Length: 153
Ligand code: DCM
Image 1 (cartoon, rainbow, N blue to C red):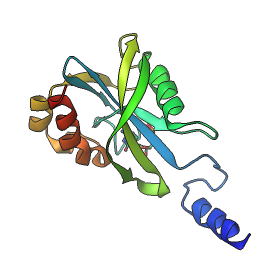
Image 2: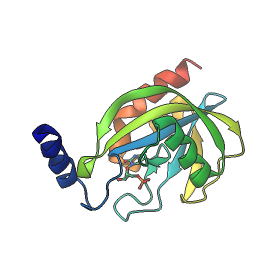
Image 3: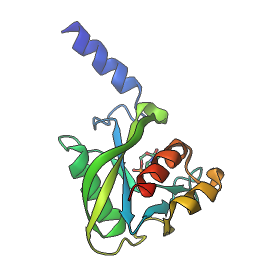
C-alpha cells in the first residue's frame, strides 16, 4: 500500500547506509552484580572513544531485543546474560536509531573488555559522582534510572 511504501522511504532515508535493511533498534545491558552496574568504555568511533556506556549493539533482522542483547554481550564481553525488565525510556540516536536499555542478569562468565577499552563496576554512589561528560551522550539520561535500580537491589 501507499502507506507502507511511504514508510519504507522514510525509514530508509533515516539510515546512514540506504542498503542497510536491519531494524533501527539498538539494545544496551545494565548488568548488575552485588549492587554495582557494569559500564564499558567505548573504543570507537572517534567521537565516542573513551566514553562509558551500557554495553550492547544493533538488533539484527528477525531478532528479539532479548536475543540481540544476549548475543551482543556474548560477543563484546564473553559473558552469558538473561535480559529482564527495561530501564528508563528509549533514547533517539543519530541516524534514526532508537536505543533501549534492559537489566540483564549475569548467568555465567566474567564480563571482559573484548571490544571495549575497559569495563568497570559502579555503585549508585559512584555513578552519581561520575562526570557525565565521560558517559556517552545517549546514556546520560539513564543515570537516575540506574541508581534507582541499584538502590532497590
Ligand atoms: N550506542 C549508544 N549507547 C549505548 C550503546 C550504543 O549510544 N549504550 C550507540 C552507538 C552507535 C549505535 O548505538 O551509534 C550502535 O552501537 P554499536 O556501535 O555499539 O553497535
